[in-house]
Length: 289
Picture 1 (cartoon, rainbow, N blue to C red):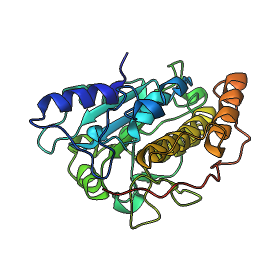
Picture 2 (cartoon, rainbow, N blue to C red):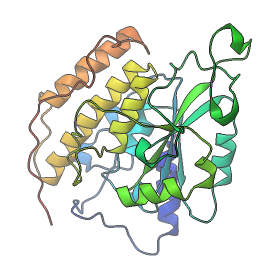
Picture 3 (cartoon, one colour):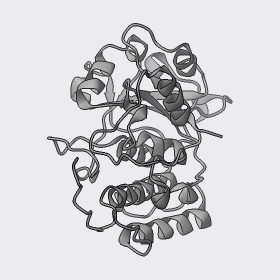
């Protein structure tokens, strides 16, 4: 069954009046399951890692159409991934229902410097300890005072687009204005290779999601998503440069290691692993058209 980003992409394509041509991408047939050329297809590696945390992608207009978009990878890994197109004039009713669902404890993930005083937080409670007995503004309590209500599940709202688009979504989305803002403090710069950024503190959507999962105690899913991004990046760049996949390269070796570790230990496995855990595989230079 297609995941949320795939369905949003299909809906956006249905509204298009002409084919979408990715800037700098290859112009060959692509697999519908992973958006890569068939010779570099990634579908056989699609992971299944159970999580209690969820991810909500609020996506700029053409972001679902871009083959380099990594929100697709998040939806591959995290079963409870929701995706909505962003509109300045009206929020999707399904998004409003999701935000009102009492099973979720929602956080908007964005730099704290742009949040109102007192709104930014830097930590989240582990996925198994967030209680429904929250107070005003989405605050949560744990322990006996929480009563017998089932634990609330972390829901990370990621603004998926260019930096300018993300800032616009953050400042012009009334439905998000009452939610706490999770401000991440990454230990290192982004390793994303498929698009350029002028700032080292900008991360791709998949990297942000992995950091959020790690904060929520979803260590196995975080490591899986980080390794999956490395493998996707390798396949994408090899296809762009008309080179074969290095199945025994560093990215795939790390992927096999993380996959075996996750299969053996379940959701909490890899808790003791250093974060972030990266491969040191050199990336082939991109060929620009």
